[in-house]
Image 1 (cartoon, rainbow, N blue to C red):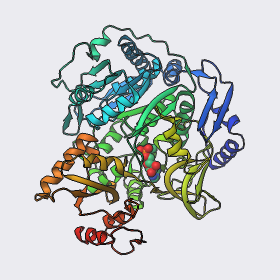
Image 2: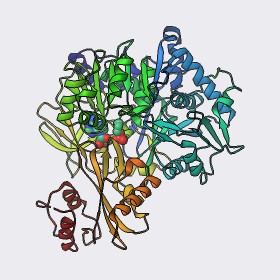
Image 3: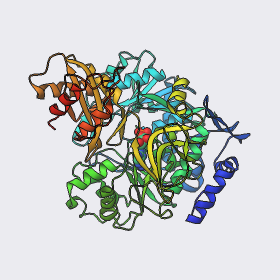
Length: 631
Ligand code: WT7
C-alpha cells in the first residue's frame, strides 16, 4: 500500500517523486478502482494555467470511498456521529449502511432534477446527512458546493449565484452549543434572489417551525420514502469537477476553488494515510466543519478512501463544557486527532481541570491545521493532551492545494515546534524574493511558491479562469504562489510565517480585508474603512477596523453593535470586528493607496518604527490615529 514507514523511506519516496513524478503518481493511482485506466499521467503548464492528471482515466470517487470496501469492510464503522447534546445518542454507520444511504440520497437528488454536471449547494449542520449529501452529489456526478452553515444569507446567495446551483440541500435548523440556528429561514431569505434554484431539499433536524414553499421545498425524509438504495455510480473523467469551495482572497468576492475527481482522490488518500500514519482499525477525528476544505479532504474523502472510521462532531468545543473534546476522545477511543490552534489555545485558557478528568490514553497522533501554531500552544497540546507520547503533525496547506502539502509524517519526521517541517512526496516548494528570484539554500526566508504540479491542486476558479491565473500564477510567473511567507531553516525545515497579502486568518477562518471593509461600509454612517489583522491570544489574528464616519457616533457602544449587525448580515458572525476605531482620515499615499503597514503597526500597539512614511499625502493623519488608539 502507499505507505511510508520510516525516514529512509520518506527520503526515497521524495526523491522518486521529484525524479519521475509521472511514474511516482501513476503507481499511487493504481491502488484505486478505475472504470477506465488513464492514458497519460500529467499535462501541465503554469501560464494559462492548465493542469491535468490521469488524463483519459474514468472513475467515480464514491466507488473508491464506499463500494470497494464493501467486501472486506462492509460491517466496519465508517462514520461515528457525535451530536451536539451529549445526551442524544451517538450514531454509528457501517460502510455497508453508508453505501446504501448515499445511493438513496443520490436517488433523491435525481428525483428532484439533479444530474451530472449540475452544481448543488449544501448548507447544512454537521449531521451525517451532510457527509451523505456530499457523497451523493459525487455519486451522480454533480458538483457539490458546500457553504459553511455559519455564513449569512447574503454570503450564501452570492455563492449560489456564482455557481448557478439548481438544488440546495439544507435543514430546518442546526444546533451549535446552546444555540439553535434557523438555517431554513436563512436559506429562504437567500433564495429570494437566487433564480437558478429549482429545488430545496430539507433535512428535519430541530423540528423548528419552517415554511415550505410548494413546488420548491421538499422534506428529505418524505423524499426518501420514494426511492430505493440502488444507484450506479456515474462515470466521471479524471478532470471532471468534483466540487467547488469558496474561499477569500485579497480582492473582490470569495472565489470558487475547483477541484477535480482523479487527482484529488489520489492525493487525499495518500496524504491522509501518510501524514497521520493511519493503521487499519484506527478511529480518526478531525474537528473541522465539512464547510471548509479540511472537512472535505480529512473528514469525508481522505478517511473514507482509506477505509477508516471518521468521527463527525455536530457541536462546539465548549459545550456543555470545555472538556467536550477530551470526553469525546475517551468515549470513542480516538487514535488520531486533528484540530486547529485556535481551539487548542481557547481550551488551554480554560484550565487543566477540563482535561484532567479524561484518560486520553487512546490518542496516538495529534494534528494541527489552519494557522501557525505558536510554541506555547504546541507544548500544551503535546504535554496535556498527548502526554508527551503523541507526535504533533503541524500540517500546512490551503483550500487551493486540496490536501496537506508540508507536514511531518507522524512518528517519522523529527519534530520542531511551530515548523510544518518537510514537503510531502510530490510537493516541490520554493522560496522567492520580491523580484521573483528563487532563494536557494537554507536559513533563508521568502514568499512560498510551489513550482511543480501536484494531483490535488486547484484547476480553476469557478466561471473565471482569468482570476485563477491572476491570483495564483501571475505574481511569480511559472510558479503557484501561496500568499504565505515562509522561512527555511538550517535543516531545510519550513516554517510558515503567515500571509503576505491582504488576507487575514481569524480562528483559522480566512478573510480578505477588502471583504470585511465592504461589509462595514454598508453601515449608513460609515464613509470608509480600513481593516487589518492584529495578534490575538486566542484567535491568532483579530480584526481591527478603522472607520471614517459621516457623523462621529455619540454612543460608541451602540455604533459597535450596529456595525457588528451589518457584518453578521453580510458575511456572518465569524467576521465581526474585534476592535473598531473611529478616525478622521486614513493614511493614504499620494496615489490614494492606504498604507496598511502603518495601520497594522498601530493595531499591534506599535507607535515607533512605523517605517517609511514619506509617501503619505497627509502625515498628520498618522498622529491622530495613534492618539485615537490611546497609544
Ligand atoms: C491558509 C489557508 C488548509 C486547511 C485550513 C485553512 C494558513 C494553514 C497552516 C499551518 C501556518 C497555516 C496559511 C494558508 N495555514 N495551515 N499549519 N501553519 N499557516 O485553509 O482557509 O484555505 O487557509 O491558512 O496562511 O495560506 P484556508
